[in-house]
Amino acid sequence: MQVDFGMAHADTSRPEPILVVEGMVFVDSNENGVRDANEQGAAGVRLSLLSPCDRLESTWTNYFGYYRFEPPATEFCEIGGVAVEGSPDRLTTANPILFPPPTEPGIHRIIADFGVRPERHP
Image (cartoon, rainbow, N blue to C red; front, side, top):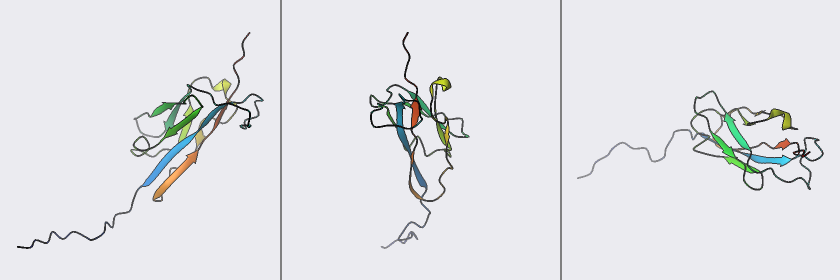
């Protein structure tokens, strides 16, 4: 007995875009908004993805100031930016960093770095 379920040999559906948002939060010692070779990452900074959905995705920078959002955090709703949470007066770069949500299939990698002023101790 042979049964034909009518399945196509190849999936003809269009693959969805895959979004990865990553970057560095760095201590901008000269406060020029650009990461210089001698400027270290800022650990423990909280960042959030921006989207029109009610679901909030956030993460923290690691010891080296690096952060990364990837699926499944980036696949349930259109992501249009990333923002540092907390004291906006400490930032030396734009916050949030906005970008158009990808519409084409494939992997889309967004690099978004943020500079923060060094902490001043009395």
